[in-house]
Image (cartoon, rainbow, N blue to C red; front, side, top):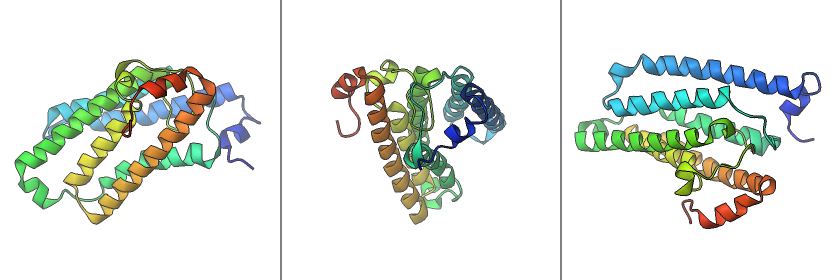
Length: 217
């Protein structure tokens, strides 16, 4: 039997109501993250990075406030669990303290922070372009090919991978290196699943994918 908690709940609650519940929950959760980030302004050595992360949570809240019902929703462990695990992994990088050798080299330390800032800006741009089409799990809503999608096929994942790499470098440890590699592997897997779903729902996506770039071209 296919892993489908949303479909199971849909037997008792209308799917439209379930979508509304998910949206409200995510808005409240992201609002809590946003308030926490706002309170951390003084802790950021690079204020542009604080601004980028603040905008990230703000855009996510907007996305969930106006998110549309999917044309094809997620089903199965691969489409639901894998993306959720992948989204959570970067937070585990923060459990390790900053590496003293990295902190001691101010040019390297600030270079990594500004690298995170640029990566976060790319992620924010990608999420703003998606807005109501954004989803964590593998779903298809509307085809978006504007904004940073004109430059790279998966700007959000690109930004997230680069930002996670910077965090893993600042907090360098064997465990964080392993976490980073696992995160990258899961993100690349997610892109393949999303591309398959988008191609099935939107025939125009195949043409878009054929003329756009990812890491491998």
